[in-house]
Amino acid sequence: MVIPRSFIGVSAAVLICVSGIAAIRFAAHAAENSSRVHVDSTPINRDPQSGNSYSPIIKKVAPSVVNIYSSRIVKQRYYSPLMGDPFFRQFFGGQDQGHEVSSRDNWLGSGIVVTPDGYILTANHVVERADEIKVGLKNDATIYSAKVIGMDPPTDVAILKIDAKNLPAVTLGDSDQLEVGDVVLAVGNPFGIGQTVTRGIISALGRSLSDSNERQYQDFIQTDAAINQGNSGGALVDAQGRLIGINDAMISPSGTSAGIGLAVPVNMARNVMEGFLSGGKVARGYLGVDSQDIDSGLAKGFSAPNANGALVTLVAPDSPAAKGGLISGDVIVAINDKEISGEDSLRVVVSELRPGSKASVKIYRNGAPQTLAVLLGERSDATVESAKPSESHLPPPKADALDGVEVQDLDPQLRMELRAPRGMVGALVTEVDRASNSFEAGLRRGDVIVEINHQPVTGGDDAVRLCKAARTEEIVVKVWHPERGGGRVRFLSVDNTKRAQ
Image (tube, rainbow, N blue to C red; front, side, top):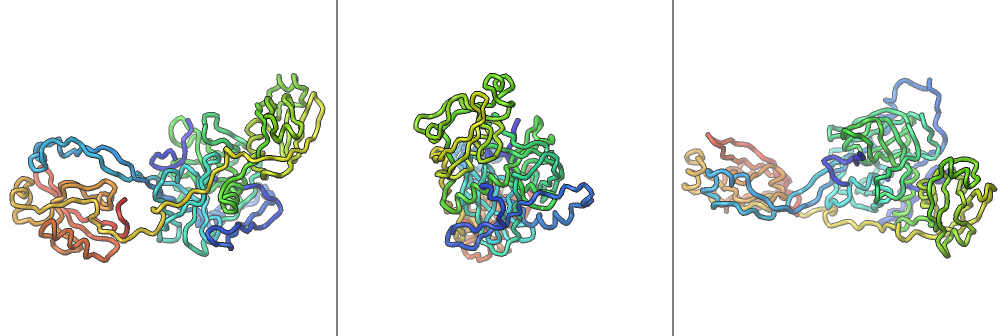
């Protein structure tokens, strides 16, 4: 079973390898010309005696890993549990036939700050279908509204932007330099318990998920560093603190870490991010062949030197491959000196090349090595346009904290039926929209509002007046909740800064 790493179950990363440069200046997005990522492509120091603690690395990396809070409004038919009790039916109007209400579905993931001015990489499934995305930084109490710059389901990578400056951006490494056995650290927020670091090694490279239909480009880093729910979108870093992967999923029969975690290579993530920031889309190379993995039997049958490579089964007419001389039965073993291990590897390598660029394709044909020059096309079916930010990602207007709440006067008859304390005055809550700020704070149907911001409430009109007059970002509401054998009093803090959707 493959489990995405978002928290609270949503169905809820990627860039071309450019070696030998220290920084990439992005094309302007929203007139921001100063965004930079820092890249260090040198191989890691693999001296096993280099140190006994990763504390200095974590101190450097941890501030760059953020919490991502995603939510969306869903509609469903709601039947009040109070209607099952004759005690409540007598003053709420008989049988409840059910009614459609809105509720907010929330989930949690992680992300990584990659530029000082607020660009963030995360997993696409952490933010897909969300109508509101918030970001929390480790050493900053501010919760930022995030704008979606791009979402790419084929790689499960998304790019967000928050309005902030001088952020602690991570340094990107070069995932093409990785080797099995390298030490890695996974940083994220598993189960919502707070930022957590786990250590492990790279246990495999070039993994793919055979049961995934949406993710067409898979070249996962496999690690035994524990990855659990809420880790998705978090950082996988090497022992020098450089980002080498975006934590994405785990393979587990139990739903918790079984030592097989998967991360999207950072070079793939860089490719996706550069595409969105420079042109608003991901432009992928197109070769025009169908292929399959090759085993030892096929290697002998096609006179290939070994079972590594992608066996061409079909060449599309008038495709770049056809024009470049590829034919069915060729075994592709390398493109631009990058080794091709199989069908998935071929798809990933070609997708990361620029459309219109010339690719050097090394093949075996009838046992003889050849090198063909192919001018790549563009995969129009795999191009993903930049997602447009919804209004929910913009600063919300001021709101009445009782938006979505219906109230009425607590008259003597209702007071008696509720068995409320003698002399109690207030506003009886007759309905609460499940998508409202008040519901989020804990207000429920049947509550009696007795105070708002420490001012007594004498009835329904009084409750509305006091809420509209409030100028604070949080409104303190004192309520009495009816229960058999009495009732209980509690205080709620209701958000007064955003309008219920």
